Image 1 (cartoon, rainbow, N blue to C red):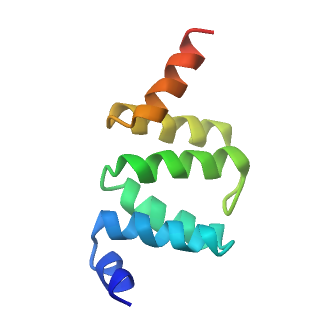
Image 2: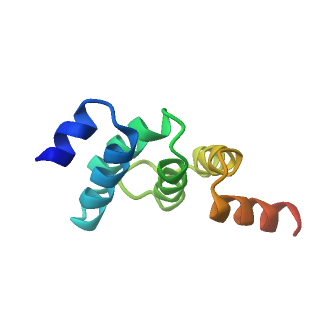
Length: 92
């Protein structure tokens, strides 16, 4: 309950954590909602997870452009995995 209250009050870390809980419960639609809220606050992990959801079409309509947008933003926010993924894409 505390996690939901923190997420609902705008805590981006709690929003990302809550999204992961929903993802583990096979509720990617709800996960996408909470990841999006956290990503809008520049939460790098949320941006990266959101990118993956869009790439897979998991809980959201599949869209490579939106997936790439969130991956680029995650990389720009310092997310190490997103940075490596972008480096692999641009070096290939």
